[in-house]
Image (cartoon, protein in one colour):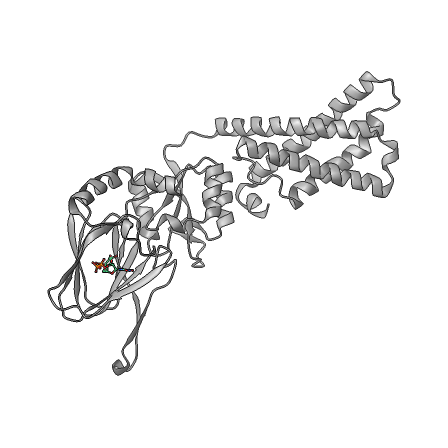
Length: 384
Ligand code: T46
């Protein structure tokens, strides 16, 4: 509830008001049916105080049980369930109140039950109609609004890239909390529930992932996107050379210490670590690509050339110092050349070893890379 109010106060309160109007209308309607069909000495004045209690209970239940949670974009099925939950809890609480305080005797139980049944129908229809109306009166925007999910390491270039693509980056969701409230004037969110609330209440059109493996997207956010019918997209990101943080001892004889941190430097889950040693100079290894495996390569000792090919272009990255790292996303053909005997290659990988996940034939790779480039977004979105 708190996050809903934080990110969509006006809309949230408008739905709360709508619920109260529905309850009022349901009571009038039920009284009209009940009193109209029977000749009973019961009227609106008699029913007035219980109606006030019903409305107070309605507000309390909404806040305590979060029954207005993401009502703006829930799917219809979810809406039916949420409205039923809300009305049922209100009914039980009112029942307990009337029973425990013994004030219920004077009120018609038939009107109360009927009012809640009618209220359920009114709330369902009212929320749907209000939601449709809100989306209709929403201003036509020139640019699509985007929530960008990335790490603090890639946030600046991610924003730039999306600007180039003519998107309006409205919020940033960073994997690791860096205690910044905003970056380049864009608000930062570090809690997944906040991010999900933003998707609902702030009319975000798309969620973009930049520089991350799709496995880093929290399941909570994936589910929220699915329910709100929002798609994930990936911005091209095949490899990056990164600086590895290194602390030099004040006395050079003690050497240097380098470190990599999950979620900040490593944009994928680490499932495997391996290293290659005792290789002689001018030896070539590799000659394969990965379909799924994301990697972070570094060379703590020696010099190794990593020749990368994405099916169209070839680039060489030289790993020649311990404070240099290379992030590789899937779909890149690689060849490693040992420039110095005994150089050590260390690899952090996102997947367990699986020979089926390698492409070891270059022609096969070319066909795969073409398909991968054309359908990268579709593949990733599907796998979420
Ligand atoms: C990569 C580059 C940088 C395993 O059984 N488990 C493992 O985790 C790995 C990595 C390899 N193996 C076996 C498979 C082969 O029978 O070890 C043997 C040598 O592997 P490969 O020929 O793939 O080694 P490289 O140096 O060509 O490639 C390795 C990694 O396999 C690869 O993921 O990106 O280092």
